[in-house]
Length: 117
Image 1 (tube, rainbow, N blue to C red):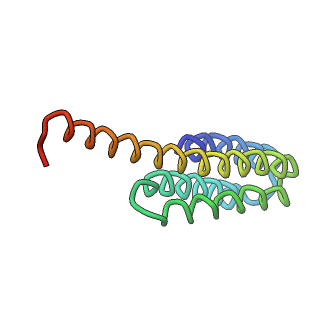
Image 2 (tube, one colour):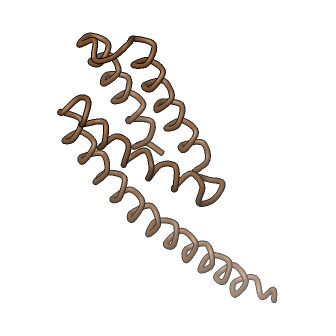
């Protein structure tokens, strides 16, 4: 979630660059930038509700890298955030598994110490 929230700021700054360089009509620049920021927020909100948030978040990573076609520095920024996204998903998955294992161990310990079935 923290990667997606950070990307909202990155997209805001990239939109400001597009605005300052007048890369397209300002309505288009802010529409695309605003849409991308909303997409990041939506993905962040849906992460705890199943795979949809992860799919949208992955699509955001691809779009962020692709935005380098308009603002070339975004190739590097997009690649960095894609690496962060992949790392966060791997580490987060590992943490979830370890949490579940610890919970089950605590339940088992509680059962054995109280003598309940």
